[in-house]
Image (tube, rainbow over all chains, first blue to last red; front, side, top):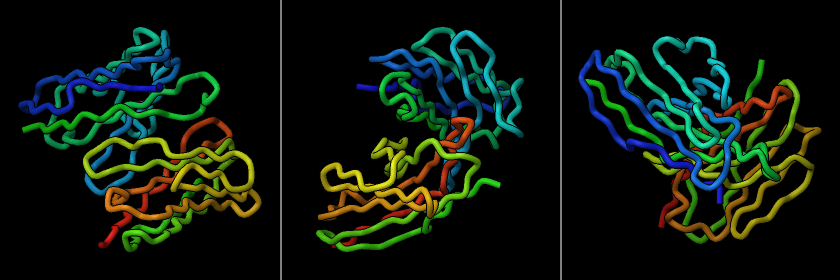
Length: 117
Length: 109
């Protein structure tokens, strides 16, 4: 159980375009989802915490107008990188809490590798 | 501030045992997680400790001492596929996950 999917797995785009990444919990309802970014050989960096039906909470230094997060349902959260630039190239990973007996465990999606040219 | 320390890199031999240590200083404690992350992939959940002691799960075991702010992940009968980064993370008093930088484990034949 506790499967999280992400789409797309890889995207290449031109500078200035917007990219949407979807995160879905496939076999459970996720009241809370998290978005991380990971640069090569570095640890995970939490970008924002997303709760269903409310605005996302962004970490310090993360521009909320650039990284738009929508948690439309208990199984879907989206991250839109607006006007992407080469420095936004990174590995974006979502995770979700099940909210059940292992409520605090985060299960990760497979990640989306973004390359901005 | 909040801090999690783990070694940057470790090397071990196939078939052997390795222990990866993690020490933490956080504002509150609601549990400690270990995740495995292969290169280019997302982390996968290994273990969760909230009480002192050893939790065994197959070849992997995780130990916690809250009084010492210390945990370790023990991997037995190492296999080549165990080559990965191992991430220690602590859930603080606000139920935020604080991540360590990860330990890259290299397994040699």
